Amino acid sequence: MNALAITTAISTGRRELVDVRARSLLMAKWRVLWVVLAFAFAALVALLRITFLGLFDGSDGSDAAVNLAAPRGDIVDRHGVPLARAFPAYALWYNPAALGDDGAPLVRTPREVAQALIRIFPDMQVDDLTKRLADGKPGYLRRRILPEDANRIHALGEPALEFPREIERFYPQGSMAAHVLGFVGADGAGHVGMEQAFNKRLTDPSTSGLPAMMSIDARVQGALEDELSKGMTDTNAQGAAGVILDVETGEVVALASLPSFNPNLIDRAGEANIFNRVTNQVYELGSTFKPITVAAAIDAGVVRDFSYRYQSNRALSIGGFEIKDSHALGASLNVPEALIHSSNIVTAQVADQLGGERLNATMRALGMDQRAQIELPARGFPIWPKGNWSRITTMTVSYGHGIAVTPLHLASAYAALVNGGIWRPATLVKVDPGKAAAGHRVFKASTSARMRQLLRMIVSLGTGRKADALGYRVGGKTGSAEKPGAGGYRESSLVATFAAAFPMDHPRYVIIIMLDEPQGTAAASGQRTAAFNAAPLVGRLVPRIGPLLGIMPDATRDVDITDLAPLVGRGGKE
Image 1 (cartoon, rainbow, N blue to C red):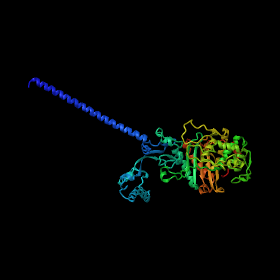
Image 2 (image 1 turned 180 degrees about the horizontal axis):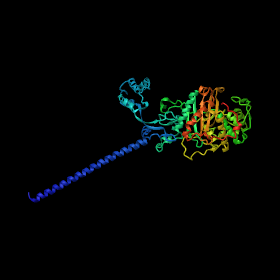
Image 3 (image 1 turned 90 degrees about the horizontal axis):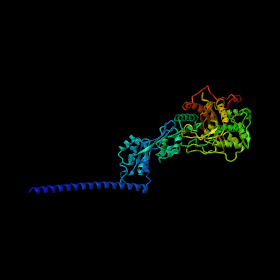
Image 4 (image 1 turned 45 degrees about the horizontal axis):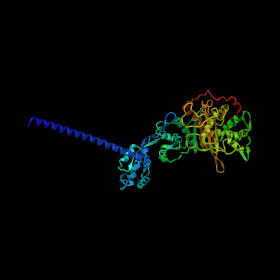
């Protein structure tokens, strides 16, 4: 073979090798392209499938919504103390289809599984649990379990017993402020209290990240509930209610209704005791209305001369009805004495001079003819005398009979009595400085100043003496009203109320305390009236909450009553 032939052969081989390499490279590129196209096609199919399901699938996607939704927002008190929180937790779920639709849902018998679960949860009932397992219906066996409980259930080897992770609503303070907070039901929605009122805000992903701050002070709330519980126990009362209100802003610093409930246990305790006596139950609050009547009369110019004396030793007979006092108070009383001794007879005469139209207008201006203004959904409607008030209606309303309102109505009215005359709606939302509702004027500032004197005199000289707390200048009024029943009022059933404010030289807070059907126990000196049960409760409560609210006792200060003190005699006993 000559050199030319060898050279030609080498060249040809090189060209063939180059061709093979080119074809291989081209094939590799095509393979990569096909792989990319395949992935793109798969992604497109997946995207179209997701779009189709989102637009046309018949399910509502509730399970996905539950799993993907942001946790429910926290509720905190005015200082950031947590009152309601959300955190992951386990549940015990029974899934009969876990082993397939054809086989038995459980490895062992329902009775055996129930007995095994009872050893983990002794508070459950074996017969009830056996029945639920035997029914073969999916559902919760227990809404909340601990992680160690989940491990013990897993060790039973029953695939039908599942423990999914869910978002738990937890109330770290237990039953405290339960009627303010409400609870979250199995449906994930808020019920009754601020859980219901705030529901949209707490569940909206755009707002749930920020806690909802309430006006409640957890420290004051705890003190109020503690004293109410003691008062209710000491007097064997059926129930109790209390509210503490900022007179300048309308903020509710504490609100309690007893008996209460634990929102952490609502799924097991049912709906017992969720009724709110402060905002949802209306009562005839008796003599606590007398200062309101007197303020209206002072504002209208009906009462000018505080030394003027009204007859008080004879019952008033009006249209077949008789108005009398609980005990003899002497031949005559002036207005300061009538308030200090709590005279129905004199208050009725003042109201008669004022007239039904003007008293009606004052009560309307205080919101007594409509549901209490506050964010809570459960708000009772007052029992309000309709039409033009007759003479007897005007007289009985003047001392708190024939009209029924909630304790919150009374709190807002007393705030207007002492804060200079401005009525504002109550609120459970913390109010920023300078952002309080404008409200509207009900009483003149001069009338409010006079009422601060009179309310202080009731506590220092009259029926409210047991509410006096040294250095806190407490003012207020007792009220003891018989509860209406079939055939008239029941003498054996009283509602005892004390409406207070402090410190009276510069009022900051109103306190309403109510006991429902207190008994004449030894702790109440054998008496059932407010002077012996509700008033002492205020006297114990104020020194507990005053320092928490920035009010320190000062025995060197008091309301100046030098112009009225010479006009009054000894106090009464209501």
